[in-house]
Length: 300
Length: 130
Image (tube, rainbow over all chains, first blue to last red; front, top):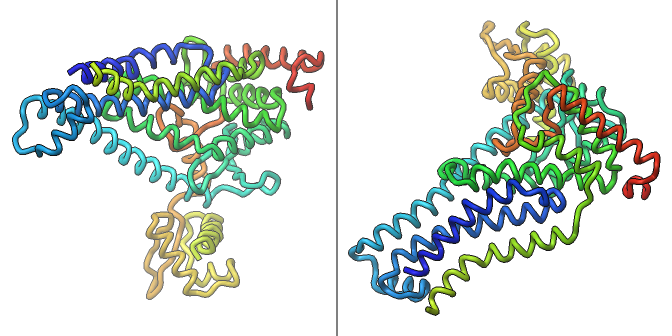
């Protein structure tokens, strides 16, 4: 039972306490990509740990070690379930089934919405001659976005072309290319799918917004490789201000909107290699945590 | 083939969008989109009808075709989707910048002005390297 208790404890830390701390922390903006990996490690580790906890409950009467206990349970077959097995296996099945089922549904829904958007886009949008791989929509509102996927599209409205200067437009396109190249949509998909069955978990509630912000910062960094920080920041300020007052912003938090945090970061902050390494080390530690729980408790 | 048909769908829709709501025959479309066989145009129109982009009415033995929705309405629909997209609620698309309140816009312009000053002073590392 020690293994099960350790795994349940680690899940509470991973899905409950750690996300709350991470979402409040300031340092992730200094190493956005490493911070995203840490968020992902927490998600993977917590999910595996939770499934493992279920199996550990089921096999607890058989052996203190989870691997040995599982082997014995498989050997003995599942003829009649005792109460431990019933509770443990039900838990493991619920978590594994909920995770994979919700992922499939979210994935399919997202692909369908994207496909429909892209088909209309290809019909009414104009391919830009000046910006290869970019589609211009004839609309006065200033909007820029990317439609990710296997056949990605980078879209600017004609309002955006009027609002921004040449360098700033190029910086926006480069930012979107950053999203497309790094397949940031594939990072977001599993997080979105968690929101379905496990929306009550702090991790499921906090991870999507935090990671989405970090991915925007990572794409800003990508744009900064070929453009000045000023151009990226100016594009952000001008586009965000162009819609000011007209469209309510839904992305407010205590530290200001995501746009404000990105602009401040471009203006005042440098990325830190040390912070990045620390975050990656933490990610590794998080990743092996369930294994430590299983092996550590088996010895006693 | 699919890509070619996609391009042709666009051309056909452009014809239908010029006189919105006025039904036209395949022959009339053929005149405005030269170089394609009658049957190819018919295939494209059938596809567009199946997708709901085109409405058709019986005229004797043939059909007349008209666009169901204007180009502007489709554009507005895409823009609405983009404007309503909140990145932490959907993985469908990623918008470059959400809108901010007028008060926040003022603050942001100040930060940007500061960035331009530091650039002219040559203090920003990144700008100096360019």
